[in-house]
Image (cartoon, rainbow, N blue to C red; front, side, top):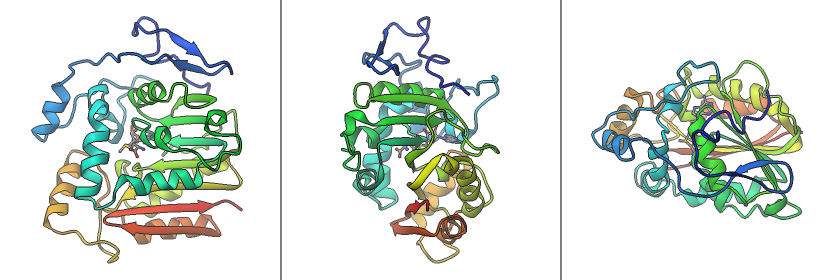
Length: 291
Ligand SMILES: C[S@@+](CC[C@H](N)C(=O)[O-])C[C@H]1O[C@@H](n2cnc3c(N)ncnc32)[C@H](O)[C@@H]1O
């Protein structure tokens, strides 16, 4: 599938701002004011515990999965403040700096970011592993939500040598098959808990089959996910966390009721000779290395 650089909000009819070429042939959107439909409408819905309304579709026009559909442009405007600065440390007990450290440790010269959201970690990581500096890194963004791809590409304009966007489902049955393969790193932060599946073992195995053929030898697959089950004793779910998990799962914003650390470890172990998992609060941080 060709990179989608114009299939959604990037079309001139939908945007006032022009696109810019960054000198390498990659199409990026010039920074400017974003247009948001119903600016505060979805934020108000979220405050009242209702699911945001989103008009995003798959490329064939069908509705995208609930785990990605909530990321409307106006929700993305407040995502970093609400999710990364408040919910991550205060509810799940894992500061965003630990996730940023993973990007600083693992993200390489050619990087795929899956479910990038606002692109916070890509923007704030210094990419110390990139041998010729962050400005020479090539990034491929994969997301089911065209809103996230648009928002993130705008945020990252000018940061990297190239940013390409692809509207993809990580649970697809076929390998991603991107034109620039192989990649040095694949980052997938805070995504597994959003996607449907009976448990983390099933979801991680499926995602590895879809993404990891695109990884080079010595490449790293890394990320983090909020665990939703304390069945294996790896996390503790008290009343407050139970309330958050129940609310988010009832709206399909999270789909992690069967997600244990054990399931994640089993899936990584079945696919990689070298891997590690660390649990901080209710969040599992993982890295796996391709031979
Ligand atoms: C919670 S946000 C995480 C954003 C960012 N990675 C972070 O750590 O802040 C989840 C992201 O995954 C995307 N997403 C959800 N389901 C997906 C799927 N099935 N395939 C691809 N992307 C998906 C959402 O659109 C969103 O960008």
